[in-house]
Length: 88
Image (tube, rainbow, N blue to C red; front, side, top):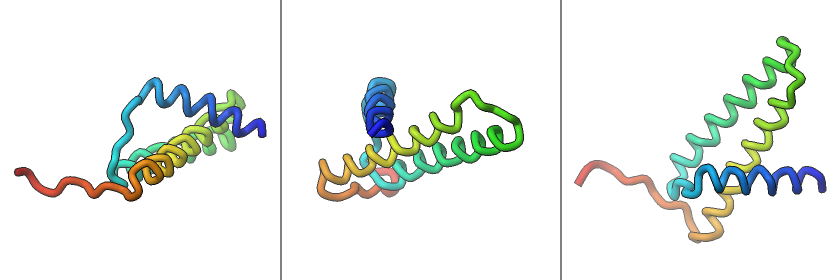
């Protein structure tokens, strides 16, 4: 249950920092990809750089927050919006 409490705190902070979240799945996945890269970098820093600052844990929480927000967007809208195509 500790992780759920940590997730709730991280989610609240993310919502305060970024109150709006993209409605379309492609932009959501782009954000998730960015967060994944940050997890990978933190894993390298932890493994080879000796970084024990907790950065890896924080980055994993950030991925969890993005996944939560993606599911929340799906549940609130019933479907993921399609990205806009072209300029009108």
